[in-house]
Length: 145
Image (cartoon, rainbow, N blue to C red):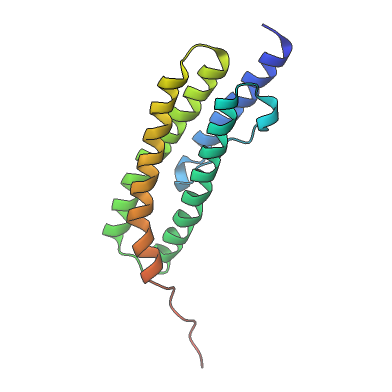
């Protein structure tokens, strides 16, 4: 295996490790490998897509979690959101795995596209669930004396 390929694989495995560390807070760590380091245009564009999805998810999730901490979002709503969040994190992780395999030549782009499509679909579900709850429930105003 060429040195460059070993470095790419190491970087992508590092990304996966970061994804796993993000699980306790329901945040997703996005692929941080520079797209220029990757040669396959499909993989480069797919990483950009996953990055955008994860940024959107993280912003909504952090707001949702803060609203729960502030008592604005009920425990039941929060638990339902966590269930979808776990599905999204898994789908995102699977999509990253698929891109690693495409980059290594062990998976077709069509197969990876299915995994990316699933991550996009579940991201849409979590945004549909979180969006109305985040938008309609502003944090409580600070108490004034």
